Image (cartoon, rainbow over all chains, first blue to last red; front, side, top):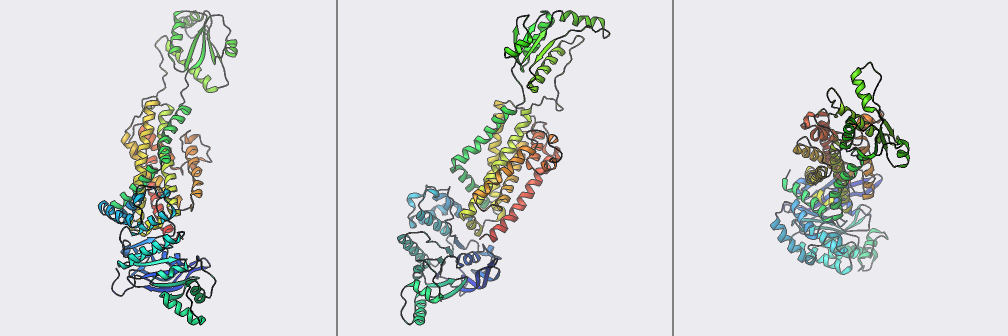
Length: 255
Length: 371
């Protein structure tokens, strides 16, 4: 856990350019311990690049990305075992079994086999994968693979979690189940930064950043965002998709 | 650097190989298949050339010539009745050569000895050859010359081909070390390349990259796994070489294994390096012929580097397998220690250092900038 008062994830005037494209364009944000923060916006709005800079995978072109108080990627060694990252791809070894995937990700975080085994039991029960423990990852359904991917992220019980589009491609019931997991993790003291292009999922977050063209178009609790949108249009805006359209002035976003 | 993380990566790679039964079978069958196919195709020993033997003289001397010829594996001698025409035997009888000893051969032969070098009287043997295959013709000529030398009045002349190291080195003996190197290079380079590209495509590389695993630990994990695979493959090649082709290993097997493992380490480095140039698995496949063709053609595996045209010869020294062939042949055929073949051993060590260092630099770059 970061020191008292210090944000778990922070960005200050963060910039990342790829040639002429400004994927992240002078973005600043701070996420406090215990928060579940939703990075919401359409595909291509810079969510993935922001998350990759926060976990040290991508070097910023300008500004600063900090994770648990450490500048990334420069000081990533100081925090490498204290956060978990779930990439957008399912990111599991397709030719390993469910158990072997969890074993490997546990081992590289220095966990011994007994602890990995105990933790595997917990996670498989939590993710309803207990019946698939010896099954190879490439024989799992899409949803099961996604649950395995989340389990691999959670294996070493990190304080801070960066989840890049964890619910992409899941059916609504499974998406709801995932959000219940996130809520539960948050209740147990984890801090979660989760990105999604499903605008309705913003309502499941404590706080939301609406991303558009590499910037935060608006930020606040879902209720605050609705209030701002209502003020702008002079009527209540119950639908999060409409909130996004009002606050960004765009027609982007997917249901 | 933590041993447990290296072991974790190695264990994972080995488990992946274990689960992929087709790749596993390929890894074990490839050395066996390569050894058997190349061994039979290139073993270089001509055996069982069909030869008709027509003896018109029938003396003790001609009987001993026949005996010598019959002992020679290269020839399958069939004794024909006197009076047969050599040419028709060759054309219609299906023989590849006909040896005919004319009447009075023995008396002329001894007359030569009796009268000394001043005489032109000399025993003559007719040899009819199918010249369409020069290698077979040469083999028959050599066998006949050997048989005649064996007679040598005034002491037999020994023409047995002697190798510098005291044994007759057959092609297959020096071919087995090359196959070991080739198989190890192919499997280690290609599977490392494919495996890392697949990690990038699937996103597991990003996961590993944000974990405590260091670049060096990642590469060493692969090295450990494929070093083990290389060892198993070398055992397969040597087992088949020994039991099927009776290859002669004059040197230390342990040194040979050490060199093969070192070569595998360099090949893992090369595979890692190439993975930086491929973003998808299909791009990675493009590299296979690029690695394999020069290895097979330019490394001195099939023919000596000296037989390669001068303009291409410098390229031979850019092919890692050239050095592996030199050092493995020095160790296995000549019975030397690796460092007694400094160019080969030095080349392999340089290959290991260069590729592993370059690979870890490249991994850093890719890890940081990959989007």
